[in-house]
Structures are given as structure tokens and as C-alpha cells.
Length: 314
Image (tube, rainbow, N blue to C red; front, side):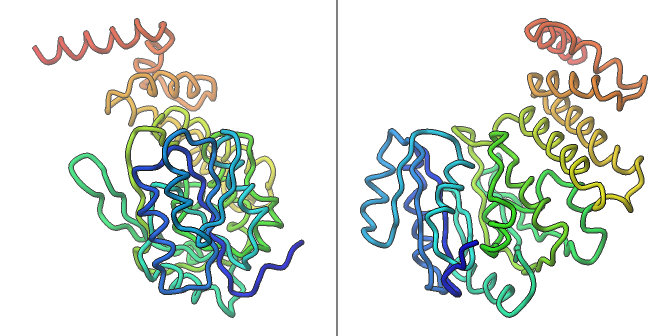
């Protein structure tokens, strides 16, 4: 295991065609009040002007290039090149408050915690921005159960992590295209101390083009797979949670997401999630009127629901 440079924070930023937002993301790093930072931008095969923007910052940015492999291979590549005792991840379309590292580093300094996490705010949602959100103090309850209640306890950039914990975990799994940060938090944070900073320090930008979370069905499926794998792999960590509660946290949450997609009329996602629900067996007779139509071909299913909508709107 490598020992990172004391108190150095390595920021790892995967970048794929992010020219619209990259400058703001970089300057949210270079403008931090905590200045012992190295910034590593991992270009994941961009075809726009992203790399020209990154190069314009000179030696303030360490630039690594790779063919397009996805965000988690890019993060692992940056982690291998990093030198810091502490690691933070920032996507090229998100940003931090200027005192983010000052607050998160202070929470970890001289403590046994492996992660310091903070609140965040969603930017760019329909109708404006989301409300600032402070996550719960996970150490104050059943931490594993609280983690399993969520698709992720915090966005990837709302945390500062000790290098030692990341290296013990072997970095990010690359098994799936999304949710591997959630999988990492489950492995790192459920069995070790973590600390909350009770302030909104991170900002998560919502947009559709190229964003990992834009396909809800894939996100829902991957969260379900991550939870199931975690429970199977670490039975000792869930031993004090009843089987019925675990079912609700895993399969029940998948069913909830299916209905959420249905009522939002994201019918492609609804159909695919309901089909997974059918295989899990976690449904009742009242759910069948929503599940059975999803066995139709996609175009037939969408057409059927649209006809029902027209009928009810007459």
C-alpha cells in the first residue's frame, strides 16, 4: 500500500466532452481556500475542446488521456497516478463551494474516520434548482440499514476519502457502468467510522446529455444488483436486519422505482423495471395490473398506456 503525501488532497476528475462546464469545475478546485491540492483530469476520449481548456491551466492540472472506457476506469486511472493522503472525485460538470476542502479536511484530520461527507444541492432541475439537502448522520442509527435505504448516501463529489481506505477496497469496481460509487461506499463506509459536515458544500448539475443517471431503468437495476451483491458478500454486516426488512430495502425499493417511472410516464424505464420486479417475486395481486401489460413488446406497451391516458382525459 502506498502512503500518500501528508495532508495533500488529490482531486480526480474524469472528463468526456465536458467543454461547457469544465472551466467552472476546474476553477472550483483551484479556487479552494485549502490549497494543498493536486488536480488530475483524466480525459476519457473527448472529441470536443475539453482538453484545450484543461491544457490552458498549465501545470495546475495533471492531464491523463485514455480511450473512452467510462467514468469508473477513468477514476481508477487517476487514483493510480495520485499522490495525496486524501482523495476527492469531481465530475467535470459539477463543482464545490470554495471552503469545501477546508471543512472536509478538518473533519478527517486527527480522527479515525475514513470518509467525511457533506450536504449538496441539485442544480438545473426542471423549474430551477433543487433545495439544499443535508444527509442524515449515518453514525447515529443502524448505518447499514440507512445506507440500503438509498440509491447512494451522497453524490460522489460530496465526500473526502482517505487513500488508505480506497486502496484497501481496491478502488472502484468496473463491473457496471453506473452505481459503482454506491458500491464503494457500501464496502468502505458501513464497517468504518465516517463523519458528517453539516453544510452544503457540493453542487450536482442535472442535464440529460451524457449523464450517467439519465436512464432511470439502468440506474434502478444497477442499484438493485449492488444491494443484492453486498448482502450476499457481507452477511455479517446485515445480520441484525430482519429478512423482511432486507426484502423491503432491496426488492421493495425496486418496485417503488417501477411505480415512480410509471407515474412520471417514463414508460421505457417502467416496463424494464416492472419486468425485473416480476422475476423477483416481490409483488402482490394489486401490482399485476401494472406488471402484466409490460410483457407486451415495448411499442405495444407504450401505445396501450397512451390510449389509456387519452381515455381518462376525455
